Image (tube, rainbow, N blue to C red; front, side, top):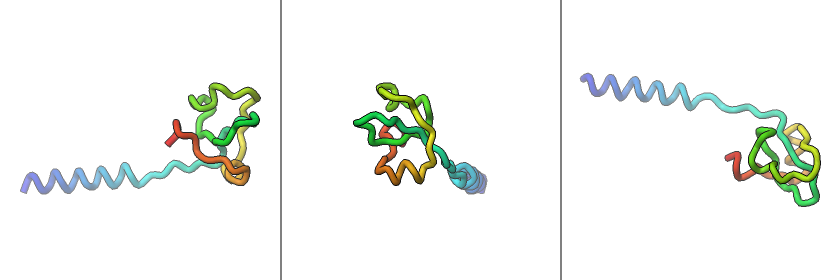
Length: 74
C-alpha cells in the first residue's frame, strides 16, 4: 500500500514537471556568410565564432531563412 502511494505521487510529480513547455518567440542568429543555425540564447556556444553582429529575430523569420536549431541547444 505504501509503495503504491509513493509511485502515484511520483507519477503526479513527473506529470507536473513535464507539462510545461518552453515558448520561444525570438531567437538569435549570426548573419555571417556560413551561418545556418538559430539559437535560443545569445551566449550560445554555437555563436562564439560569429564574424558579424548577433541579431534577435522572430523564430518564424529564422525558419523562413532556412535556419535550423543549433546542435548545442537541443
